[in-house]
Length: 372
Image 1 (cartoon, rainbow, N blue to C red):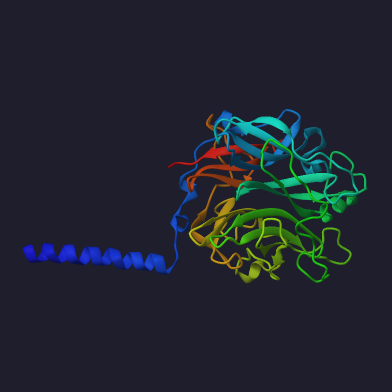
Image 2: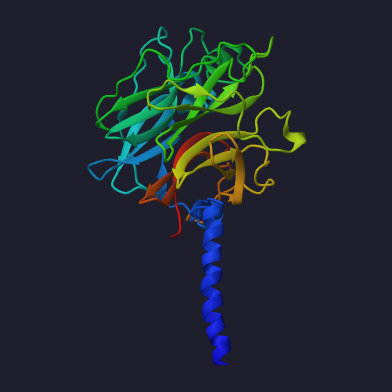
């Protein structure tokens, strides 16, 4: 019996050491094994950010130096309908004492500045990041001169002018409630090559900095297609820079591509990424548009990458179901979009997202608390 016990003491530590070596070798982190779907809690009324006159979308949250929490978000008049974010969206700022809210509107961040500017008519898709003592706000901007009839519709040809003029910009500040320095040119523009995957438009920026200080920018891209207002396929690309302000070097091929051959010709595969870096890897939560990454089991999917170019689903890619629960017992009639996670000391605490209410008669941002 003593011999068996001694052998167990020898074998078990050795096995643990071997397992540790395997984990280090495959470069896995806690996020490779996390199951967000088991952390989702019902949404309380205080965790819903709504406005009686505006549609709310695109919540991007960061903690300020003063201990307050700031949400940069998109808004446009409810009366114009859901698709009126083009050309009416503006980026605004809200503040709260807790990361999950309740949030209160503070001010409009980017005022309209005229159609002569690339971002002069509409700003949308905010993504805020603190880096080396400054705050950077990446966003989509667009311009145009056509009149879009309200309530807005994708059937209106004029709507597509503003959609196709979308470009990606960045603004910088040292004070979250102060003024932001905007630039007269986008930080990421369309490619001059008419055959490129992003020759028509770029939008939906997602940003992170890897463990080597490389800036990783993931973005929506649309190719040109002769005679088609909407252009070609909607895909996502990635670009890299040594500076938060660019210039960015684009990778030539799309990312977030499901490997199944049946998915190659779909119009859109992924949408609305949120990025973060951890221990040498990059992670993204994306809208799983056709269910290619979660086998049609979830609205949002968790992907990982070692280089920002090659992506694959994690062990538990399901993030949230297609319908989410409220604390009053009701369920959403829309799927969660525009994901954003607030981290506290590297741990995910709150999952934010945009949600249509009553068949998108209006929209709100919600904060979903995550179990420890």
